[in-house]
Length: 83
Image (cartoon, rainbow, N blue to C red; front, side, top):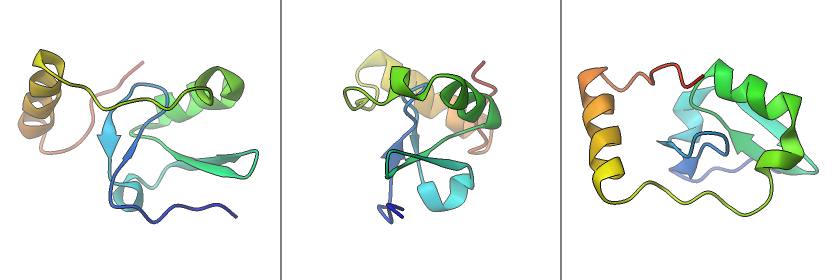
């Protein structure tokens, strides 16, 4: 299978930067592995994988990146429910 062992990857649904080893939620679509920050993102991907497998999602930048980092810090690294 195409499991990735990179240190960080991007959730294709919400764009959050995650550690694929710690996330524990993954799916394989057309031989490519995808990792998710929460079960809600995984379920959204499972319902329409072709919607999320187009262009790669880039990590957040600017004020959104700072916001995402603050949320991660305040929740102790646990992702908030995305959907």
